[in-house]
Image 1 (cartoon, rainbow, N blue to C red):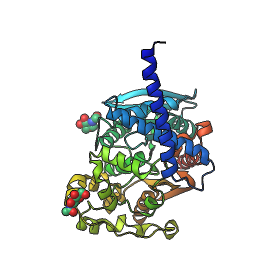
Image 2: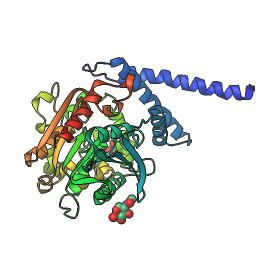
Image 3: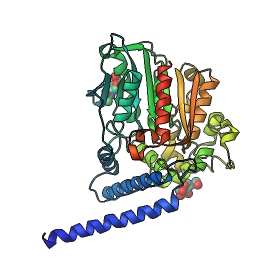
Image 4: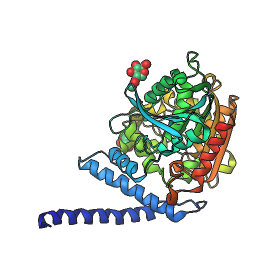
Length: 408
Ligand SMILES: *[C@@H]1O[C@H](CO)[C@@H](O)[C@H](O)[C@H]1NC(C)=O
Ligand SMILES: *[C@@H]1O[C@H](CO)[C@@H](O)[C@H](O)[C@H]1NC(C)=O
């Protein structure tokens, strides 16, 4: 081989190896591994892969080679292969400009199917139709439902509020075509994880009062994001450094999607962007007073929100947007929502989002079921079929979702 080729190859190898060493140090110095986890070594390896991929992506982005989200999705779509099932027919479609994927169980009898609209997670950075493909195949097969997975458009090209409008459009489109898919209109549920769980909350709220569309039968929120206002809750303290949603990754997703400069992250963490009168109005729904005592181990309530900073408010005020913060919807809207199934994970920075939103629904008389997973962590469901990289919590959650749907 020519020496001209060897030198750059050697350089790249040394760089990648150096990055690996840096990754391992970063992991060892910053990552907390929950004690309830049965496979800490696996968890550590996955976290290193995650940090490595995101960091390499960020370096490529700085070098103007490709954006970090594009790189991250390229890697995870190839690392974790999608597998099909002979019993489920998969079709890629576009609803307008929105890519969607339809999973249809092969007809066994003349009965019509249930319907599931699925919004994947990933903070607008990771996650895709491919990455969440196997979860959808599983749901379609096990619940005998037609699943519509929404490939909403995301970073780096699309920002707030495109994810919400894409999901709303796709959902409405699906609801209008249930007959052609053989779906029973009285048996449609919406389901999502992480940001997709937040979308479930937003979409069900947006559909309240839409008498022209079939009513959603139930909503399934798996470790959802329902607010970006209070980051001083017990779970944000307890699970600050637990993969796969550390505070650093969470705030990066929020700032990129909401087009906020990352230099405001401390102001957001401390709540310095929240005007005192706004806090006074919404405190009753956002405060840790709503979190049961048993979830407040070692929690010392901080002064919140921090000293108000007008510039921070001007930069980040859309985080307070009532239309995109399901937790802040008015009582009248909440009272008309479909019944709900919540999944929360103990080792998740967003655990308390679930507890707060669940309480809001309960207070308005909505029928709520709740599955709390002691050994669960954020993002775990997509690992359910990843063999050596799978965790018991992944399958437990999917089984709970399936039995909830079957019991409707
Ligand atoms: C979403 O729906 C609205 C109203 O029907 C339409 O104007 C808009 O173009 C749609 N957006 C996309 C991305 O399809
Ligand atoms: C607001 O925060 C910025 C950045 O931290 C700081 O430079 C500025 O002085 C603050 N403004 C006030 C009024 O505290």
